[in-house]
Length: 526
Ligand code: KIV
Ligand code: ZN
View 1: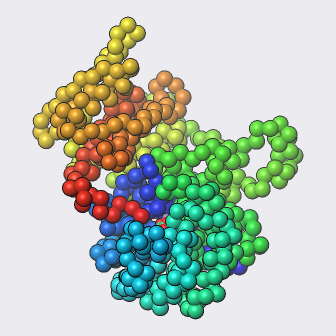
View 2: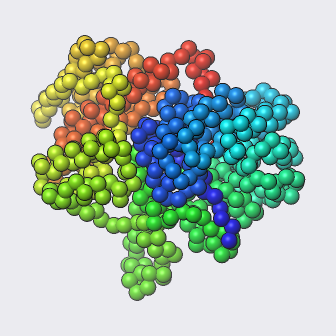
View 3: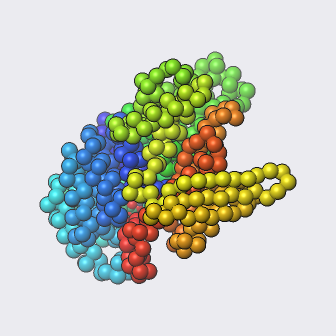
């Protein structure tokens, strides 16, 4: 059996999903769970892209042991130096350097000749080698790159020291036969290919990212790049859980195995979905809510007689479990800690203390608290802003609502030791509060933010249930800022979530408010 390396890029390519953005604490928790899942490499971020990304890669490198920690860099000196620095504390570190090699990217984006691109590739691999022996090279848009040139660049990168060459289908253009043929061509035409692992990295624009990755594994690829729940740019990346389970089910045919602890899959999927705010579609393969549900009577009957009639794998094999446990008021701190661990929330001690304290407060007020409540509180605490990030602080909210008059709200915020007040009306109390907040932001900060998503969920049953509010705002440049909060009061949960989102927008503006031309050249993604 060939051991296929699983390279998880949830925290880098996955985080580039529209609508997903994770803070440093959330990334650390996900990275820890990825280590429990048994991934071989964690691509923790793109350190030069923002101070937050740098910090997350640095923290993950320091705290997460087991997998190799990887940082992305363009074929640019500053990027590579930044990745090298961020990864300093890692037990095992990798720098992943990329440069585009397709004609359209070289002509239109880089405005460089093929020779210049090849030279940059070599120089950047050589520089990355000064920080670590483990260097991955990606010719971006490889699936649309001239085959002969692709082979030349791979050969040159390997001669310069690349230990992995990754063949990205950056735009999700490939189909399985063509992609497999490309891998075969490289195996047959790159003289030093045996000195490197061939990796595959497929985007899902045509819905065949997993099929492409499998076809490449069959042709000898030794590493698969993928994300939890298949999140990523546009239609996403190859989904880790799907590719891993396909290789597990058909390991004999492919002659391959992975080191993934598959019973950790469901938990990891839920964790990533909860923290990114990107829901998992109900019928998603492997981890969707319906993946093991049988509606049709004939199927139910069959499964009761013999599970294998309609199920190809066991729910337990992917860690899927049914209903939640109810934690009694007196179940204590250990029960809450166990619930957090079971759901993949391995928090830093200071955060854990805050979560436990809040769980105790809710348990004291209510008769029972369920697993989902504890997870929601943990999410809220992780979504909290640090003291230096609380540019605006919520001081007061009051709302008036009823059946015979227009709902109105007044909000008081503290900013820079001053208090600012805004009022608004709306179709209901939350809408009124949103318009009061918007008025303050428009009047005092001149920053146009549009509320783009609002979600409110009663976490568990009852009129005294905890409410979980999540919002996202867009600014004029389509940057998105999320906020979430949990409270027994739906209005307070909503306003707290909104204030978090506004604070995030203001922090972003403070760090990145650059003249138009500079902000366009800031590397935010690939
Ligand atoms: O899709 C892509 O080409 C990438 C590279 C950076 C590997 O994400
Ligand atoms: Zn990608």
